[in-house]
Image (cartoon, rainbow, N blue to C red; front, side):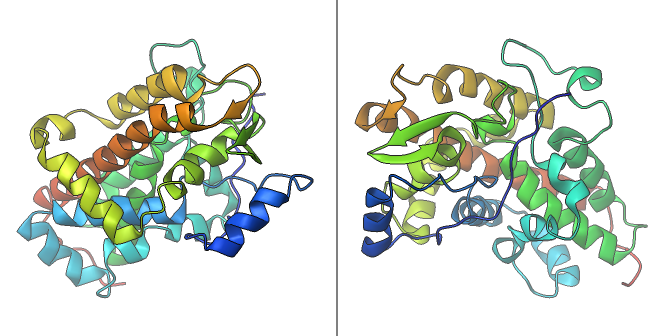
Length: 283
C-alpha cells in the first residue's frame, strides 16, 4: 500500500512574531509540527495573484454565488473541510514515484483520489451552468485550494516518506521535516508580510510571458512540480542540516511556483466561466 502524505492543522500562526521564533529555536526536544498543504499564507498569496488575473466576466459571475467572499477568503476552506470530510484528504496530493517521468492514472491515482482527478472533476462542475449554485461554490473553493497544492513539489512525488513528512531535517537550527520546510518555513524565513509577498510575485509575473505561464494542463503542472521535487526539494545534504545554501537555492522555486499557481488558477476560473452562462440552480 502506498504511504499517504500527512495533512494536519498548522501548529504555528501564519506570521511568526519574535517570541514564536525564539520558542522554536530553543525547542529542540519537541517533535516537529505536522505539515499542511502549503501554508495558510501561501494559499492566500496564490488567491491574491489569481484575482489580479481574472477576466471581467469571471469577476461578475463570481460575485453572484460566492456571497461576496473573495477567492482569498475561501482559499483555505478545503483544509477546514478535511476535518469533517476525511475522504477529501487524498485530493491534496498525488503519489507519482520519484523515478517516474510521467503520470499514470492507474498507478498514481487508481481510485480517482488524488489532486489531478479532483481538479479535473471540479473544473467540470464549475463550468457546468446546470449545476446547483451550492455545488459550483464548493467546486470553486476546492479549485482555489487544490490548484495551489498541485504546485507544491512535495505534493506531487512519492519518495516513500509521505511527501517529506518522514524526512527529518534541521532548518536554521530548528528541528522540523522537509515537508514543513516547503509548506511554510522557506516562506516564513523571508519575514515578508502577505501584501509585500504578493507585490513581489506580481512583479515576477509581469516580467514573464503570461500566456506561457498559464499554458498546459493540471497533469503538466503536476509533472513540473514533480521534477522540481526531484531536482531541488530532495537535494538535501547528507547531514540533513539546511541553512543559507538550501534557502537561497529553493526560495526562487517557492516564489515561481506560487506565482504560477496564481495565474494558472485564474485561467482555470476564467475558462470555467467562459464555458458557462452561470445559470446554476439556486442553493
